[in-house]
Image (cartoon, rainbow, N blue to C red; front, side):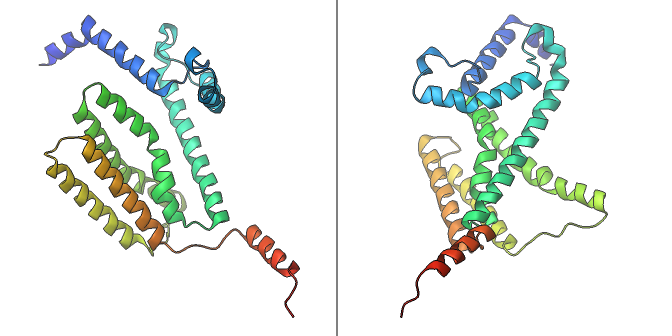
Length: 249
């Protein structure tokens, strides 16, 4: 079996298949520095100018390993890509927290909706590309494996690093932890039962059901989380505006 695998990876068929896969990834991400002729106006031009700063930073800091002369620079590209992911994630969380404080949105709702969806966009694109290549099992396994990694590694690792650095346990608010866990396990059970009802087949109707489940989860998060106080600066402006209002006689 190992000899067949080695032979298969050296065949022209495998090389052609990898070229097609790379092209599908490039078409899905569409991170070229110049807009294509059919998208050079309207929404295409707007999208080009929105992603231009991101593409410029990536082009200047990450070697393109698909070029023959830079194929051995893949460790630098890997480390640099992870660094950019960390920077983007930290910036998104910080800016989202500022917006939540200004408008009085609970951080739990923010993490349940906006942050969860924003950090899952790359995974969504990867799953779509794999599914378009006919590897539906790989796409489903990728989604499940990513969730398991987030729970078992992404969640405890920051607290482990904090404990090793400061020598003490990290104290976090757990007022809504039980409710969140209950909703999480209920949603997992509901999704599993729904997929089983569809005969373990990924159909369009199943996709509609999953979107409905997410909308229900989003609504439940908004309804069960109390609103927090607004940003102090916004409160001061409101108080000043109320003070300037004439009193009724």
